[in-house]
Image (spheres, helix red, strand yellow):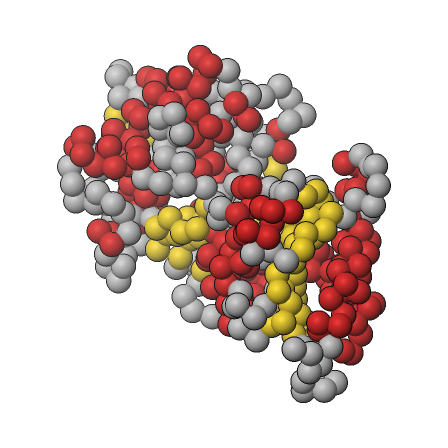
Length: 411
């Protein structure tokens, strides 16, 4: 292959319910090679935004491993979760919280937004600590829970008590009776590791844009339940605001937790309004309040881990993709991160399950072309059953369109 052959970087997100980001990248690469062959160099860099697929993307980038773990789902039923580990030091444990509190795993039953519980996430954290983790990376997204991480805290040894000293019931329902938090039996290892939380939204914990108001209805919450969840999360934040922040000395808590060291109501207000804390039903509340956890935009974190910006610096074409290209794709998602990392000389194209941005909006965002994998009228089930092949076909069509521009030596 000529040293002058242009570079094509393929960096898609997963297409949820259809294929992983690794499978999507491979399929798109197949389509590019079918048309351009040895005329280009191809580099596959599967992406994620902190939700589904982040564990696989980071484990692949870091040359790590995946440990299966027994856990429970959001309804307390036994399930199988995972903890990913990077290679080298420090030992970073990657947890996709939806493995243990995900909404898709409980849609076989009527949704119970007040009772869904995050204790299974705590089981994954314990397994990570048992395996020697020095850093916990929680990847949020797709949750069925709205308990502010109360179940996770309970699984790590904390007790959440009512006014009479009895344990409150699991889920968001019990938060209405919460009077005191007993941290005497909290697993001390949880305070000795660094915590990072990967999320892809900026919603605060409470209020009209908070976890309950925005995401509660997706989890089955009606108006009364939304109000109850919002009040419960505010109560949990109020009590956690009184707790001391513990964090490894190497990373001062005050650098990572707004309000650390500020007592009482002022800190509670900062916890309620901190951008991103509304993700996954407020699951990050306890790690932020107790351990000084850092909230990190998921797409930024994955991009830095896989070296996306560096790869794109020499790329003629970047192909990214996701299930649906719409206005949300341009705010913190994988597509927006690829656009942010791409240099001015890199053409950015998107292949998606559906394209809902207008041509004007697509061009204004910096996307040169956007292709849907649908070749005609089709149901979602039909598209999902053949997604890799359809991705390859769309990539071949795109490659044919850009073949002249990608020819070695082309201006």
